[in-house]
Amino acid sequence: MITLASRRAGIAAALCSVTALVAAGCSSSGADATTEQGFPETITLAAIPAENSTDLRASYDPVIERLQRETGATVEFVQASDYAGVVEGLIAGNVDLAFFGPFAYVVAGINGAEMTPLGAVVQDEGTPPGYQSYGITRSDNGSVNSLADYAGKKVCFVDPSSTSGFLYPSAGLIEEGVVASGSEGDISAGVTPIYAGGHDASALAVKAGDCDAGFAFDTMVDRTMIDNGELAPGELKTVWKSETIAGSLFAANNDLGTEAIDKLKTIFSQGMNSDAFIADGICSEECRITDEDAWGVVPAQDSDYDGVRHVCDVTGSEKCQG
Image (cartoon, rainbow, N blue to C red; front, side, top):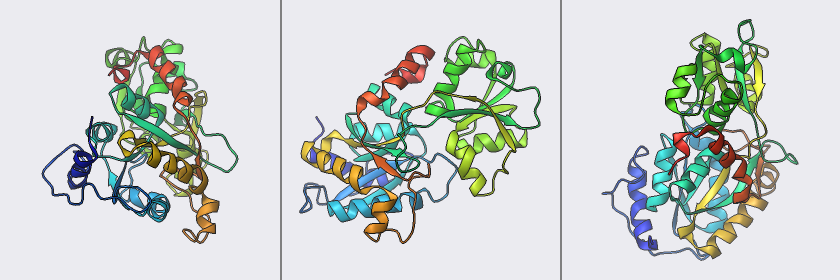
């Protein structure tokens, strides 16, 4: 069991290097100190970018402000380089809160991270938490009109630990007979995989012709990249859509304790949305959170991610193994 003291001692180490959230050697003080609200004086929130953002923290500023107001803690934000770093940070006790894609959340649990969902993001008020993976290609590419046409092509995936950028696409390719399984060998036998590193990078590589086709999540293609001018409307066409995937979520390290986690569930389900931010002066006008451009957070539970676990079974992906 990781003690509160050992977890606190690791936080400063986590902040010393976003590429090594389990590193040690930086100093930490006041390891056992808590706020009046019963939280550690410092809470570490870790995330990786869904796009190649140089300032990921800015999209989390409303979340950080809300947490600091409600917990009395200082929130330290860590932009990790990959999912593995966040998972290892949770297991080592150096990360208190994390924002995960669904696949990364499931893999974290498989690999021993003990955590509790705090809430899933929704794109717009009143919509259910969830999104889709898109199979995309250039609109002028007449040779790709379905997943079956991906066979033998250069295909951009996002990251081997990405839900909508790898896991669900792998299942789709299996169903179409393009690849035999989600193993690296079978995927490479069916297509030429290129791992772009971000959903925006995948879409841009398809746009540039570096990949014949690729994958990215729906909002990135339909809204975010169009709004920021990286894509023109109609420049890419969608040739495949996955079933609805449970939404990306915030999760808490169980080391925080049941009482603190219950308080966090309330904070996230009631106060982490654009309307609440405006009402409390955190935003002066509509603000959207995380680089998934979400309206806010709604309640979520572990069983919501059983669909992801099923796709793990279908693909047999090595990434689903502990």
